[in-house]
Length: 150
Image 1 (cartoon, rainbow, N blue to C red):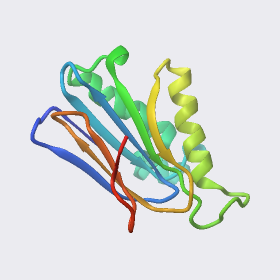
Image 2: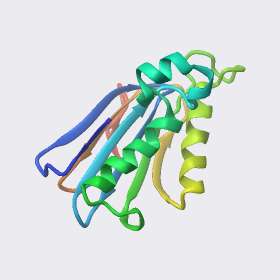
Image 3: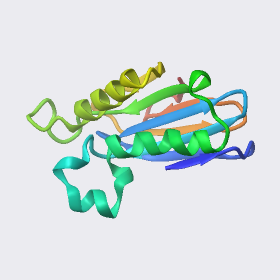
Image 4: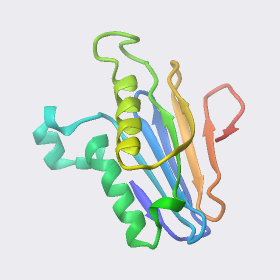
């Protein structure tokens, strides 16, 4: 997870397969943050949650927003964009981590009254996400395909 107000920064995360990248941006104060989480809920893995809580959506997403608020972001202004949630390993199998990760992000945003402005989720491809702090521009790259802006 990274949250910053540095207008020259570009925050990047690679290898979003079943993981979810949550990009947030407040255009008024130019606060940007990007979280890359691997699993939806920490309750099934308490030891891992203790060691690295940010790999879990239910722990990482609130921390992402709190860090942005600490830098002056305000909830009504925050633009949220999601990427990832692919089915790379188990397809539509019983684990379906990508879909569960995506559903958790949507649920947490809904419960907290935050709109999701754009998504590039699902499928069977790995994604790289970049977030430009100066503009809030989010780009998603997939190997062998043109980069798209969310």
